[in-house]
Image (cartoon, rainbow, N blue to C red; front, side, top):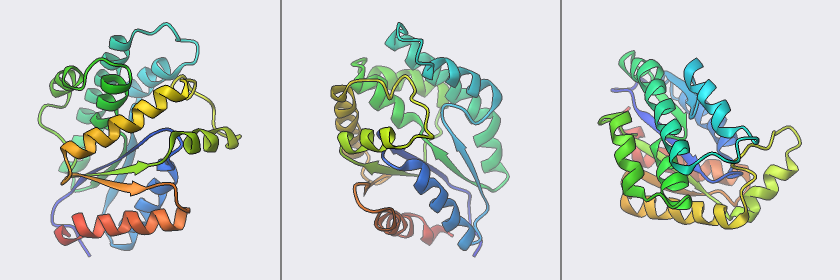
Length: 214
């Protein structure tokens, strides 16, 4: 099966929602359907954005102002978009990206209290008109998500992981608000289930939303 057009698919969710695991299974779905694809992440994906990522997530940078954080994310997003995402789409690759603009709306706009509209205005300048064709939102109780992170000895705790539970609760609320605003693009997946069950629900959304376009 070959794709008629390359799609920009993003994966979103709170910390510990299982995005990384599902990204691998999403890639397998693409392979099984002979859809050429590229996997990337935000912030990061290219050298400049990875350097910005290291600044944002450094646990020592506890004094970082919320607006500074939002601007750094937008800067990393812009460079990643023009250097990696857009070229891949032009080459006919479907792009699978771990996080995009919704993360900024939720983490900085809602959870940090900067305002979703204010953060959106920053990111409009960064992304121009590029938005995902489909966003898979993995929803899980923050306490479950954080317990998963703590149980994963191989994962290094970053600055956002160190936020209190009230912050992570706000993140979940923010994602639900964003999903309510854009029901056609954002598909919610219950990430509290087993990986196999989560994968099945994810595939169902994929088939419903995009498989008809391939």
